[in-house]
Image (cartoon, rainbow, N blue to C red; front, top):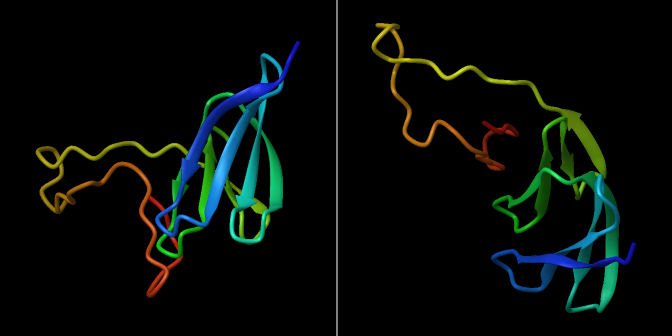
Length: 113
């Protein structure tokens, strides 16, 4: 089976990109590339069902069903399922806009939702 470029994503800085390459039916490889220095920063083998999000520093994070790969730290942290809260059933619940997805707050916290 031939490999091919499946996707290309660029962060807000514009000098770093992620290139997703199809490897086989189960996995892709994500290449984190520095355009300014013209070199590969790192490569990550990931499952097909993944997404790439960018933090407030312009660094990509690779989100899969099983973990989040923190590319700068070169480590993966386990992902746990989160059950959505229905504000009508919980009177103490404060509805939080954009409560789904991924949020980075590098100034005060290191967390994702």
